[in-house]
Length: 317
Image (cartoon, rainbow, N blue to C red; front, side, top):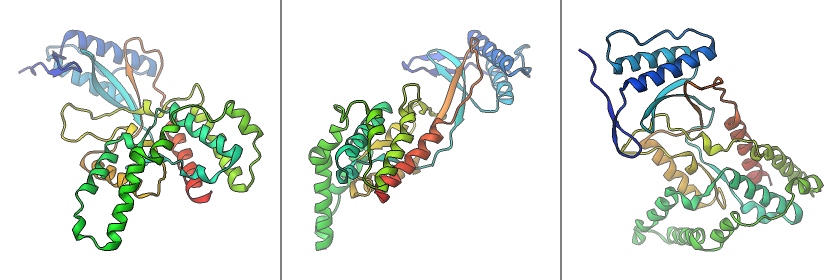
């Protein structure tokens, strides 16, 4: 017996039959073109009396067998397309947070350079601050559920300090400092300022070196880290959504304060319900694809630099 047609909802919530001759033909020509680019024979050609659905499955297996990366079938509009993708090396269940509290210990030129570099970095990578995430809201709501009467004096003081800090993130001093990072420049011609800067200590010299190393990550032809946000296992209306990359790479005030720590634990709890989405390179292939998929190593360079930079500014400055 032949397999029945497969009908799925597209992104406009319209049910479409994806097991059509047109889709099979498009997928076959896409796979043939990619095999040609790889200079190998595609080990399957859809002929015979099997159903279109089975032919698409066999074609998927054939492409998967000749490609060294992962292969997905995706619905793009009303058309099925092959997506070839690659997982980058990236630490699991990790928030990438850039703090700004350390800049208050800097003075003069190095301070302006550092603030301007961070401003450009978060703008280039479209980074939100932690208050834009659901984890901030979740950790703030948790305070409301604390039974105040059950706390001893020290715990009450801690809770009061925490509430005060949340208010500062919400609409106080910290809120204003975070907002300032999304507005006007701290200095013009950043590259020139970096070249002419004379750091007053070895710690500041190392900070300047790390900023110089970070500049290529925001160069005009450089990728944007959020463009690696591909959910390889996405499905409609699932119980728990994995945290997207934009909730994992953020600006904060301090990475050691209780607000950020609480937010990190909310993020970890969320990840336990689902899986951790990490940077993925991907390409949708068509019969017109001209070159082979080459993932590059940008996310690896990004995470290595980010970790070194944040460790220096938090613990060594």
